Length: 465
Ligand SMILES: Cc1cc2nc3c(=O)[nH]c(=O)nc-3n(C[C@H](O)[C@H](O)[C@H](O)COP(=O)(O)OP(=O)(O)OC[C@H]3O[C@@H](n4cnc5c(N)ncnc54)[C@H](O)[C@@H]3O)c2cc1C
Image (cartoon, rainbow, N blue to C red; front, side, top):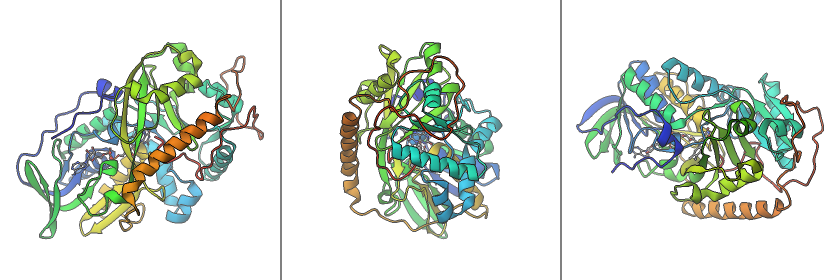
C-alpha cells in the first residue's frame, strides 16, 4: 500500500507529479531499478537517454524517500576531506564529488526542471575551535586543488549569516539550493520523456534469479530484467541479504517558516546561499526563494510531522536570529538518511547483473544524482567511479538506532550546558554597515569559549543534512 508524502513544505509547493501508475502486468526490461529517489531516477534518466530499455519500481511515488524531503542543499564534496578520499579512492572521485553541483544545475537547465533552483553557494560554518581548525585544513586542501573556496572570519560570517554564532566559515560558490521534491519530480518527468517506464505504488517484494537475469516481483506484476540497480538508500528493506544492515538509517528533520519580511529573509545567509554547521549536534539551513527559512537537524528515530514535533529546530533558529520571535512555523517533517561507518557512499556488485549504491551520509542531493549517471554509464561498459565493495553487515546493527538516540540526547544536553551563557562564539553584534564579507586574514576574533565539539571529520556528524 503506497504511503502518502510526509506533510512537508515541498509536498505543498512542488510542481505536480507526472502520473506513475503501478505496474499491472508482467514485463521484460534490460535494466530494472528499485527506488525512485535521486539515485534511481538519475540512473533511469541517463539509461533512457542512451536508449536502454529501463523500468523503475518505486514503493510509493518518485521522491517519496529522502530525495523529496531533504534540506535542498546542493553541496559540493563528500563527508570526508579530499585528502582522505584521494588516498582511499583516488583524485578522480574528489573531482567528481566537488563538481557534482555543476552536474545538478546543468541537468536542471537541460531538462527545464522547475524546482526553485538558486546557485547561491554553500557555507560550511564552525563554532568550535577544533572544527575551525579542520575547516582551515579543508580550505587548504580545496585551495591546493584549485577550487574556488574562501575562508570567512567571524566578522565576515556575522555579515554573511546575520548571526554571531560562528568563528569561521568556508564559502564554496559551486553549491546552491532547490526544492528537492520538485527536482525529483522533474527527473522523473525527464526520464519518462526519454522513454523510461516508472511505476509508483510498486514495492518490489522479492528479487530472484531468472535464467541469466533477475525477476523482481511486485503486487501487480513481475519485471524480468538482465540487470538490476538497488537504489533504496535509507529505506532499504530485506530485498538483498545484509544490505539494510550495511548502513545506519538516521533520521533528520526540518521545519519551515512562513515567508519572512524581505529584510529579515535577506539578512539570513547572504545571496540565498545554504549553510551547514560542523560539530556534534549540528544544524543546516537556507532561505528559499519565497523567503521562508528552512532549518534542519537530527531527529528522533521515528516518523513525526508538524512544526511542533521539532520545536528544538525553531528554538535554535530564534536563538540565532532573535528577530524571528513571533514568526509562524508552517511545516515540519523528517526522513531517513543512510549513514555508513566509513562515511563514504558504498557501491556493491553482490551478484552478476546486480548493483547497489547507497550511504550518502546526508550528502546525496548532488552525489546521488551523479552516482546515478555513473551507474548508467557503467551499465553501458564505462568504469565505475569508485570500487564496488563487499556488503559488510554492521555489527550489532539492531542496537544502532538506540545508540544514535543516546548520542543525540547526550549531544543536546552537552550543547545546552555549553551554550547556556551565549551561543555566540563569533562576534556578538552586527558590524555597523557593509555587506562586504571579509576574507579571513590569519587570526579569528574569539569572544567566548566555544561549545565543546570533538568530531574527527571536517564535515559534520552522522545526521546532518
Ligand atoms: C531530512 C533530510 C535532510 C537532508 N538534507 C540534505 C541536504 O540538504 N543535502 C544533501 O546533499 N543531502 C541531504 N539529505 C540526504 C539526501 O536526501 C539523500 O542522500 C538522497 O536523497 C538519497 O537518494 P536515494 O535515491 O539514494 O534514496 P531515497 O531518496 O531515500 O530513495 C529511496 C527510495 O527507495 C524506495 N524503496 C525502498 N525499498 C523499495 C522496494 N523494495 N521497492 C520499491 N521501492 C523501494 C523508497 O520508497 C524510496 O523512495 C537529507 C536527507 C534527509 C532525510
